[in-house]
Image 1: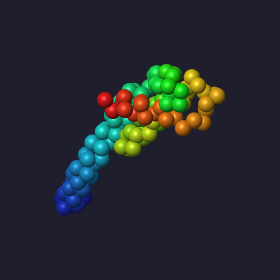
Image 2 (image 1 turned 90 degrees about the vertical axis):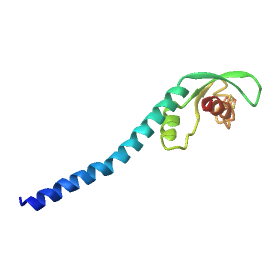
Image 3 (image 1 turned 30 degrees about the vertical axis):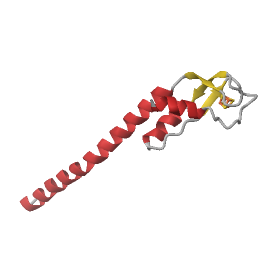
Length: 104
Ligand code: SF4
């Protein structure tokens, strides 16, 4: 391989490496944010049901929250509530309380 081709390949290798660094930084940021959000919202928690004013236990879909948080569009939704199945399909208005809590 002529010396000029070798230098060109070396230059291309450096350019590819340099262009991958920002992508790696963004990927690490997304993974950290997703994992942090997912672990913060994992497990059951007590909220006040806006419909009754009673305290109930709900469980957040932590995987979904973490995945959406990684893309800067965090969505909190529930996988369980002690008022379910009677109230399954409710609007999950108590989620606002959880979002407020998570933002602290
Ligand atoms: S999931 Fe529905 S029923 Fe359960 S606490 Fe939230 S708003 Fe109330």
